[in-house]
Figure 1 (tube, rainbow, N blue to C red):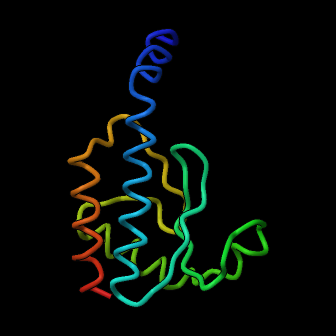
Figure 2 (cartoon, one colour; figure 1 turned 135 degrees about the horizontal axis):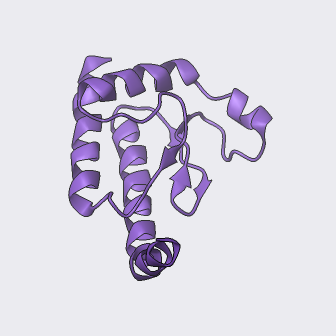
Length: 116
């Protein structure tokens, strides 16, 4: 099983990173369309959504300055739109997150903004 997973990831890794970047960009664009600035710091297929006016997030102290109230409201609104993302926690992408899943998620963001 372990070698099969490594083989699968080696074949799909670039696409995984591309879909992760596409989701991060789309989330930032969705928030920006509603006048809210966010950062999406992370490495590889893991990232966080930080509602903040800061230029960058470097430490846990920077994270504590983020607007977790707005993030929490958005995360709960996303649940009502069919997206479960562990409220106020990081995103963990996988090869199961296809372009269609990313599209659905970004469309859910637009609908969720109407709820908050």
